[in-house]
Structure formats: C-alpha cells, structure tokens
Amino acid sequence: MDSDRIQELAVLHATHGLQGADLLEFELWWSAADAEERAAFTETVDTITMITLSNLPPEKPPAHLKNQIMKRLDQRQDRETPQATPSSKTKDIPAGYSFMMDVDGPWRELPTKGTRIKELSASRETGTATFILEMDPGSRLLSHHHRGAEEAFVLYGDLQMRGKTLHAGDYMRAEPGTKHEDLYSEGGCRALIITALENYPQKSIRTYDRLHRVWKKCKQLVTSSS
Image 1 (spheres, rainbow, N blue to C red):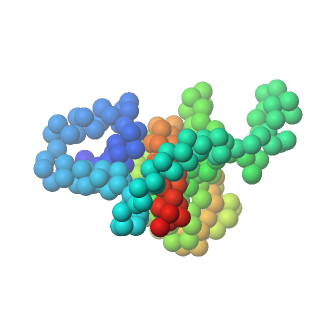
Image 2 (cartoon, helix red, strand yellow; image 1 turned 135 degrees about the vertical axis):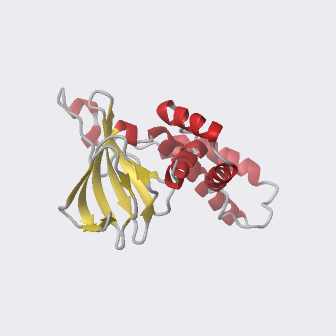
C-alpha cells in the first residue's frame, strides 16, 4: 500500500470513520504491514487525534475551567442548531422538491487547515454526494484515491489540481481508480463537488467537525479565563 493511502486510512481511523470496505482494507493491510509502515500510520493517527489540543496555551487552566467547559458544552447543541428560515420551511416546499439557500446548512471543517464543506445531498439511490467545497488562500487538501467518479465545477477563485489551474466556470471529472494529488488554492476558491458515495467519508467529516468545534470552544474558554 502506498504512503498516501496509508495516510488516508489513518485520518479515517483517527476520526472514527473506518467502516465497510475501508475497515476490511485496513485490517488486511495491518496484518501484513512492516514496522516502518505501521509507524507511519500510528504517527498520522496521533497527529490527527491531538489536533484539537495542539494550539492550546501551555499554561495550566484555572481550577474553575472544567465547570465552565461542561456548562458551555451542554448548551452548545441548542445554540448551534440553525434556525429555520422562511426559505426552508416545509410548508413552502412543493412536493418532490428540496431547497437549500446560501444562508442555510452547516459548514463542516476538514482536517486540513482552511478547508470546509457544506453538504447539499448524499443519496444511496443515486450513489452520489453533492457538496460545496471552500478553500482559504494557500490551503491544501490531503491526497486521496477515487473509488468512484468525481466531478468539480469551480464557482469562483482558483483550484489547482494535476498541473491544471481551474477558475470560475471550469470543470473537472476524475474517473474511478484515479488519485488526487497537489490539490490546493493560491487565492481561495469555492467549488461544487459531485462524487461517488464511496469517495465521501461522511461519518469522518462530521466527527472531525465536532472535535474541531469542541477544540475552538475550549480554546475560547482558556483564553477568556487567563
């Protein structure tokens, strides 16, 4: 197994997302992996696992901080639940249609800094997931394999991939079995992505996003209490 795939499985594992074919592939690989490969896998897992703590101040938090954190976390779900808008009320949606306005839906952080997605749909019937990808200037995405086809349409900004620079209105399709490397944006971008479900680690993304939100909340509490 190549190093990029090992890294990809490590990220999924660290965010509790290994399941199905990914889990089987990991178990078969782990049983035959050498010490160097296992060490690389473990190092990546440790890095992702500790990402929520990596930027916390080194000083010891005040004694009362735990109670504040627990109280804030108990209230977090209610505070962060998006409020219904007139555009998303069920009574306004004709049968057979669904809508998501620009202000609707949560943005979820990805493991690479400055990247996030908003899921529009994920359907077993069509076998595809559709989402908006946002990348801040200078941000990159992890290398990854395509088990199914993937399409990208740039809405604005620049998206660099496989030696090509895509701008607003440009389109890319990657066939099953291909691999994305050197995927980054110099000036930032937003792109519409339609990908096969087997390419889309939905559970891992949601788990990582929750960890990221908890880390941000902890960091804010430590900063406000120092």
